[in-house]
Amino acid sequence: MIDYGEEQRNELEALQSIYPDSFTVLLENPPSFTITVTSEAGENDETVQTTLKFTYSEKYPDEAPLYEIFSQENLEDDVSDILKLLAVQAEENLGMVMIFTLVAAVQEKLNEIVDQIKTRREEEKKQKERKNFLSWKAKFDAELLEIKKKWMKEEEQAGKNKLSGKQLFETDHNLDTSDIQFLEDAGNNVEVDESLFQEMDDLELEDDGDDPDYNPADPGSDSTD
Image 1 (cartoon, rainbow, N blue to C red):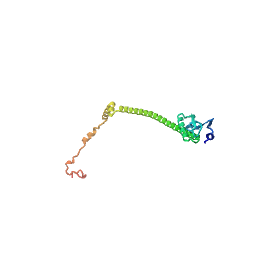
Image 2 (cartoon, helix red, strand yellow):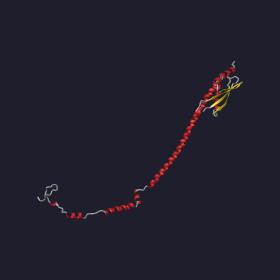
Image 3 (cartoon, helix red, strand yellow):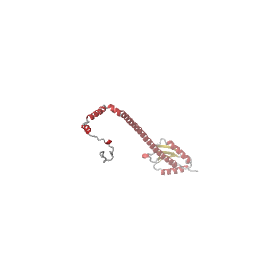
Image 4 (tube, helix red, strand yellow):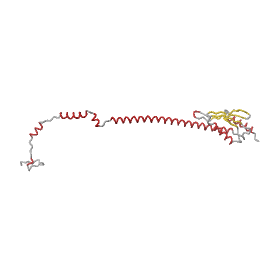
């Protein structure tokens, strides 16, 4: 016959040794106690924590102990998951002392929760950075578009103000009169030496075309020979 009381007392002594700083006896009959479980440190040394309360049933460990979340920190959305985990572990370990196994399972769960919190915060940070970037980019694109519109408007206005050669000629009234004046001034400044034409009249031009012996290619040919 199993001595349930003996097995329970032996487990209590072992638990006090394993968890000296987090084990607290609440009642001796029926044996009731708490064990505080804290996760590993997460981002910025943040942790999640729960205090589990256990009460031995009369035929424990052949029966599951009573358990509940006695207190918790940062576990509002995870309490139900921890209770489900305890139920599964208790069912799987019937017939043997199981408090250490239950506490170890919760410890692992808390560490997972810390990792999930870290991952979630990193994702939120990335989303915030992306949102800020998209906001900045939208503002930058709007400013760039305004600059482009202004530049195109200035280019269009410059094109309208630019005159063709004909327009320049028509709009500059000084061009036609200045050209005419240049020609008139040039004509008036040309001096002709009439004596040159008089000297040409005094020149005697010889006509050797009638001499049959004249050879223009022979420098020694003479029509008088």
